[in-house]
Length: 327
Image 1 (cartoon, rainbow, N blue to C red):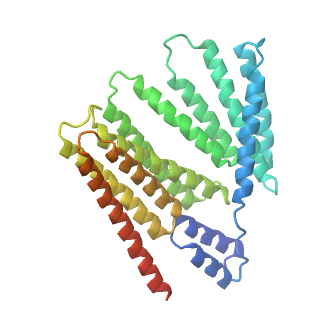
Image 2 (cartoon, one colour):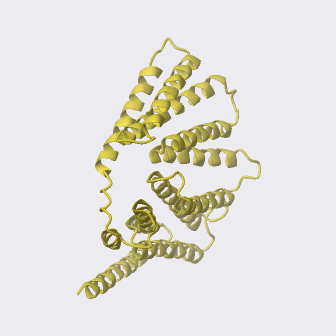
Image 3 (cartoon, rainbow, N blue to C red):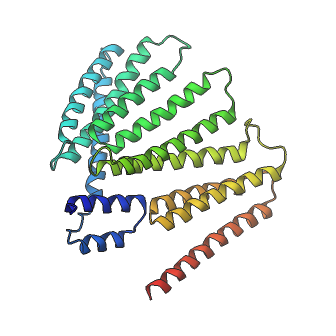
């Protein structure tokens, strides 16, 4: 017979994958005579994360504001503090009630790592040197620290540096094109979605941290895809836009359908954050339509009104179906 903790982990994985909702999750836990899972201390984690960012920025400023120090000295001091906070944070996250404090210290370490690498780069890079290796080193260090400390915030920082590396690397190539740039970011977003799915399937790192990582991967993946498709819809492959207004409106309509699909998927799976991303990018597209100069004001307003009515009636239909199910 399966152990209670194994059953609970299986139910937690189903909830994260969207196969069951929160209500079903709680009922199955109770039916299996398992204690209800403790509520995620979101407020506690947010405070710890905010404190780590504040402490890290303060230490970076304190070390970097020594005008008598050279860049190498500032970088060396930042690196030593980075290793110290990283070592302590990693040890604290290996279990026990102070795991959140360990992730907080990992955030401090990550900011000091960024300052250390930046100081060494500024002190030794020649004018006109390529920046992509610097961003690659920054990203690799942050990913390593994130996996050692199971910190989703540090993982997100590493993702931002990875995106900076891709932008710098593509911009340094002679064959660089606007469309290739956007397609590469869309592919990176797809890769993040695949990695997030694998985290849910393989459950590594073991325990709750893998859920943190999977959420970051999926969040970044969807936003990268949405951002790339939105820019491509308005600017075209070359970056000069489309010759005809109709072609651009067709591309914009396709992105609106993509965001609508995300809203539907979020509602279907019970993952509200997917719905939130779809609605957020939908609203960004609405703002872009309202300020598009090559359509009359009346046409822009009519398009936005129709899209808004579709969203409202869709929400009303879902609300009515939900009330009928519960009655």
